[in-house]
Image 1: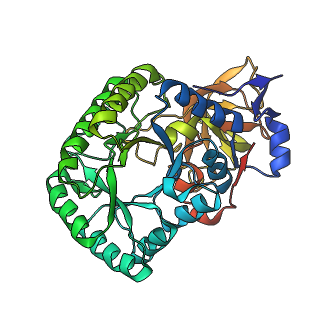
Image 2: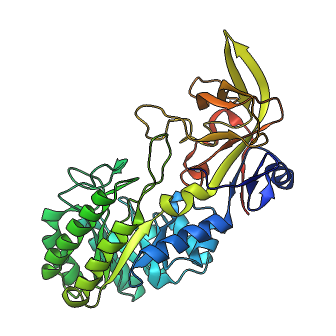
Length: 401
């Protein structure tokens, strides 16, 4: 799982020794994201996917402005989920024509901002059509829209299901013909469809099946569209390995499947660009969370390493961000990468709750006060997905190196 090298017993992040990077940052805890790993991941995808398929970064995975700015230069577009994210994407220099805005509860003010910015809005309700008709008239700009579809199937084996069954996302496929008629009557600029069945999937056969079903569904829905499809977002769902026994996603069958769909689209949807929307897969493995050991304690034979970071800064690693049964993220003692002496230790944070747990009874090098604990797979849904204000501890820092 670990994508990072080490040298003389120290982890290297962005080519820098961890202790030197910590000195440069000036404090612990901190998140660090490695530019070289981000660039390499996009390169792997470009090699595996057909050149006609566009690659979008779903910035909710990591909205740090420096990361978004860097990714904007590598991918074809950015997907945002709020006006706040829209501002970051625009500030990063992303072409507005390649920004899409999704979310089940867009406020009228956000819709107005999106229309004024000329970005593509993924419609998720009949209400949004009414609001956008008024906003388009007010601004003299026809809103660019795509329809987010809640399909009648799920992404099998996904960590989080975003479609199929009752969902707050998009509109049920049965409602789409009526919505398309409303779009036509409202004079909005229809461009296509957005289908996102699920996320965090490591099974290429499941991803391929969902893409095929999504394409077929879009082809069927296009018959009722007020204008030709220009945009077809088939979602993402590409997962990364977090836990022992998980295998890395094989991109080859996914790329082959997309090549077949892209070839079909040349005749069946000749004006459409196929888009793949990825967040976690692009940035997750390129980031680490680093905290310093404050104390070493033994309680009834169990070693506890108390660090200066915790669930308030990395909720996902604590197991409190969607895990049903808690599992440890990969963890290392970044200042003792070559150590031979190991022990079973539990890494906890400074918060007054037993939920503040970063590693539960893991085999780790014997660590002492001052050592640096590293949580891998921390480039996605880390800092921005955590309750920083909980118990009033100091904020962490994020750096791109």
